[in-house]
Length: 274
Image (cartoon, rainbow, N blue to C red; front, side, top):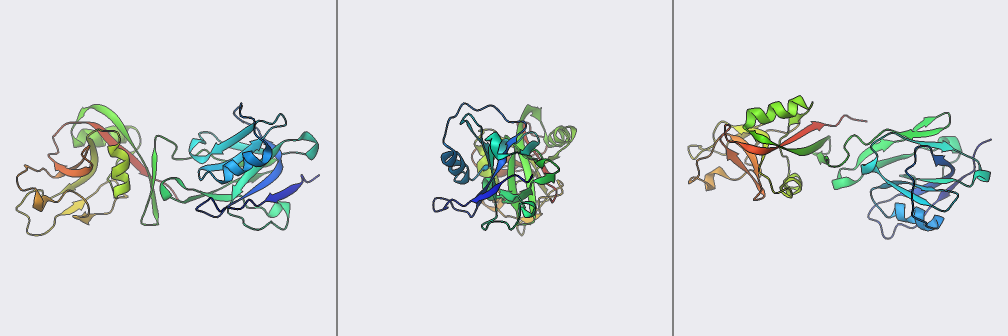
């Protein structure tokens, strides 16, 4: 028997994005027990109006579970059920019209953290649907770059390291020492209040430059650039600058000597296309 399907289209006047909730009879096989008692409509509406929420589950006892995509640290499995069981699951989806058939549903949505808008999709199984764990959960930071590259980054506190040591530290963890690409990334990491090694270097770090220097990156995903938002070396002739890029807790990038020592590093990796 095919479980009963109905599309719940809640007005999104309080949301800055288009989405709807598709509700079916079923359950989350690996649910985290909830102590929050809400009526079904409120449970579903709360998920719809929370940009990070992707799934709402209502148990037969009236408990509500809302699943934020950022907190999906293990594969989630939804199992189709029957009306008599009284269990309901609501998927957030890009669908804005009711699907013609139960089997034609495409549960696709996006990770809206930091405006990255990275798409993901549930996989159909014989018994329901599965969603792999979030590839960039907190404390990692997901960042979309230039519309085609999405990067996952985080900082680690370390012993005192120079830039070569910082690169080795990230590599031992399976990541790259990451360059910083935009002001949003700067703002995120400076909240930690630490000076951090990042990827990036230049061949002209001092006032001998006759033109803005070129900053190059070895992390494979940060584009080379000339004086984009790195602290302007032409305005800093009184400083003894070095050729390597460090993120200072004063909220800007700065040129340091590569042998200087700092106690934090920014590691990252490029997220593969789905």
